[in-house]
Each structure stands twice: as structure tokens, then as C-alpha cells.
Image: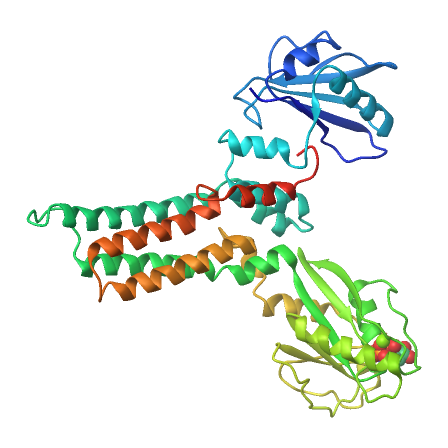
Length: 432
Ligand SMILES: Nc1nc2c(ncn2[C@@H]2O[C@H](COP(=O)(O)OP(=O)(O)O)[C@@H](O)[C@H]2O)c(=O)[nH]1
Ligand SMILES: [Mg+2]
């Protein structure tokens, strides 16, 4: 028998309404003691009176009967007036009638335990809640819809077929029926490896959809880096001045462009200096460039053909075009005036450079590092098994295939440790 948990499921603080949720065997019985008239049927939101210790609250109530609820347990929701005090009074009422406070993510963890969701679904919910762009939310929704889970189960089924064929050959070597030869096992394993590669290859775009693109703006002092940042953001975020060395620290600010998040980092102008603070600023600027997905190398000299020393992709920006007599013409470069002109071309160039257009049409993107790690590990194990096909026996191969299936099972949670499950659910908000 599960105890009954309660928590505020909407955000804390001043708001129009608050939703308080209870889940557990006694949730309905507890609610009936202080909400009148209690809804006669499940899934129907009813207006009524919620008697707290201090005041009567005119609220709405809905209940869901196990197993037809988010958690798979009896669940009751109260939709009350918003604000801190009302929610607190309602929660205290639930507690005084036998409920206990929920832990972070406990509703969702119960949904997992009751088979209502798998681990990758849960991670999809977190991604949706954290999403700051529609693309990021869509990636989360795909996980929640179990698109990845279904692909994983299909791969596991294929692996099981191969392993069973290996075992059939071992058990009945004389019967030339369904059994596997090493050759056919190898061929099928290679097909699975290709499917894993295809999934893995979506991770780059998945990162763009989920986190956006990290862009470092670097160059010599006074070329207009901070002006460019401001123009890109459309606000006066960074201090702009004709005094060299104005920007000392790095400054990160994000903006959405065509539903992609661009995380721009303005940096200190790179030059030799004796000043301790400026030396640190330059060190941070170089670090920002090293950590970025792409570097905007800004110059205000139309004859400058220098390349910023980095292994990251870079785009040279000729700024202050309003002062140029002759327009520089260089491939992979952009000519802008941060002060007087339009800089949307910078965002559009980066958007195309990262293939962000494909996000909308993509069916499934790998957006979660844990899934990526599991897929990489499974692919590595597959490579080893394929190599083993030439040197070992079918029983060893069948055994190794079992190991690959387990690795894939970690994605959906069929093979996840208690620790991992707790770690994932602890990332949820209270009340989710
Ligand atoms: N004429 C012109 N001046 C600019 C342009 N962009 C920046 N500046 C000026 O260049 C100076 C240095 O700009 P700032 O953005 O602080 O450069 P940073 O040191 O690279 O960050 C300031 O006086 C800006 O007003 C531009 O497109 N055209
Ligand atoms: Mg600056």
C-alpha cells in the first residue's frame, strides 16, 4: 500500500490559480473529508467548498481513479485561488488528514514504478519543462511520446532474434532450420550498427535544438565586438566606448532567432597588456573561443585577412562597413555595420551553418547526453562483437548480444539501477 503524497504542482508565488495534487491509495478518501460536494465521477472538474483550518476556499476538484491517472494511483487535484497562503493552507489540510509531503519528482517516479512511463519519457518531460524554444520542446515531446523508446525496443528485438538464432544453432546443430551462421549473424549485427550510427548522427543537431549555438565574439580592442553583441541582441546590453579595453570580463547573453537559441559571449579585446585585469580578460576571451561552437572573429580593417587561432569553426566579421571605401570581398566573411546597419545576416549565416533548418523536419533527434552515452557504448560493444564473429563461437556471440541489449535497455530504464532512476527523478520540480 502506497502512502499518499501531496504537493503544489504549479509555480510558487503570486498567480491566478494554484494546483495542489495528491496521489496514493487514500487520496480520494482524504479529499472527501474536506471538499464538498465531492465529484461523483472521475475526470470531471467540479466546483465546491474546500474547508481549511482557517477559512473556506471556493475551489475546483477533480479525481482520477487508479490506474487511470498520471501516477497510476488514485489522484486528486484541487484548483484553488493562487498565491502562497491559499496553497499552503490547502496543503496543510491534506497533511492534517493523513497525506505526507511529496519529494521532488515523486509523482513521476511513481508513474515509472507503475509502468506509466519509462526513463526516456521522464527525461522528455524534463526537457519540455526546461525548453526555451519550440524546437527544444518538440525534442522533449518526442521523448515523451516514446519515439526513441520504440526505436530502442525494435533494436533490442532484432538483437534478441539474432541471439536466439545463435542459440538454436547451438542447441540443434544437426537441424538446418532457423539456425544462424556466424556470417549471417555478422551481417545482421552490422545493419544494427548502421542504425545506431544514424541515430548517433542526429546528436549534433539535437544539441542545437536543445541548447542552441554558443557563439564567441572575439577580436582586437575597439573593433566593435560589444556593439555587435548589442545589435545582435537588439538591446544595449554591453558598454560600448571608444576607449580601448572597455570590456574586461566575458558577458553571455542569449537571444532566439528562428526558434534557435543563440548564446553570444562578448569578450575582452585581445592584445598584449601589463594590466593584470586585462590579462585575465584576454585569458577568458580565449577560453570562451575554445568553448564555443563557433567564433565570430571581428575586425574593422577591410584589408585584414588574419585567422583567429582556434580549432573551432569561425566567421570573419568586417565591422564598421559605413567607414569602408572599398568593400572587402572574402569568402566565409560578413560585412556589417554594428552601429548603423542590420546584423541579422550574422544570425542567418550561423543558422544555416549549423543546418538548423533540418530541425523542423527531423523526426527524432538525440538531445540527451545520457542517451548519447548509452548509444555510443552499445555501438562500441557491437563493433567488438562483430570483430569477435571471426574468432569465437556462437555461444560467446549470443552472450555478448545480451550485453548490448542491456546497454540499450538503460535508455528506457528496463536495465537501469536504482541510483540512476533516483538521479533522474530528483531533477524534477516538486509537484511533478
Ligand atoms: N562607425 C562605426 N563605429 C562603430 C561601429 N561599431 C562600433 N563602432 C564604434 O567603435 C568603438 C568601439 O566599439 P565597441 O563595441 O566598444 O568595441 P569593442 O572594444 O570591440 O567591444 C565605439 O566608439 C563604437 O561606437 C560601426 O559599425 N561603425
Ligand atoms: Mg567591448
